[in-house]
Length: 313
Ligand SMILES: C[S@@+](CC[C@H](N)C(=O)[O-])C[C@H]1O[C@@H](n2cnc3c(N)ncnc32)[C@H](O)[C@@H]1O
Image (cartoon, rainbow, N blue to C red; front, top):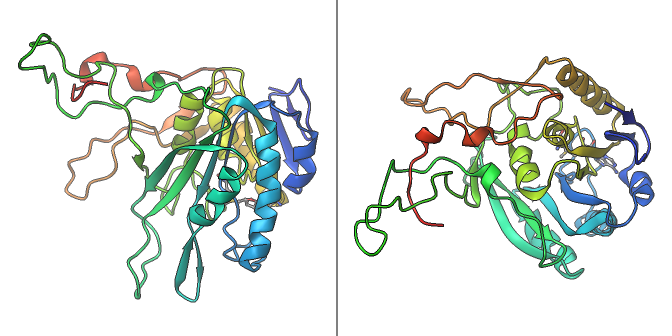
């Protein structure tokens, strides 16, 4: 695999160490099929200086404009955000960022709710247990592959009980649409993917976007790459990746994770593992070992027999 530190057409992974606004201008317009990122939330994490909201929005606008420019006409931009919190008051960042995208002509296709079980317990409001992904497309003619991300149907073998299709399966045997509420554990203490980064993506969260919004050999960009989770999700499915990260420590970890994946040593939580149930009812699915030589696209659709039919689509 060819990794370069600056933009290079022949690379598999462009891993830029520095300010994202120094990398983005080097990417040709319309080059990337998917931009997916979780930007700094302006919360005073180790990698950010807390600024007033207007200044934060100005910084975000510069990056968003460049991201829109480099996205192809059939491509997508996914902005994953939570809340900015000041003196106990929350400002949902998707609400204040949405107008930046909409005013530049992007179309919101889903506001995906990412629900997870762990986080800070708050005493003066309900504990926050979700964040969102704003999925925008650049035009109405956009790529969307549903089949690779279908999930098992809820009821086995349910059939039409009347009408011309009586007796036939009432839903898609390949599985159902995963909906716009995604229950995926966040990367906290015992998560198998945990590094020192305080808020890394679970790889399975980005896998779903990579599989549904890009094809093989397409380019995926994360302008705030952290420890490289989006790049790993792209590369493991034979896409190419571009990422920028300002903290050398995280760049080093990203490189190490890629190296582990190349040598078959990087483990991830598999997409088909059910969320842990305290009553012991969830089945255990072992960690998946990532191999960058081998595509695992379509893994959700293995074992046809396990899919239950619920609804027509
Ligand atoms: C919310 S984290 C993203 C984590 C990432 N999704 C992952 O899985 O590791 C935001 C990242 O953006 C980086 N960052 C902040 N400002 C940046 C800038 N101007 N250019 C490049 N990276 C930046 C931070 O160091 C941080 O790692």
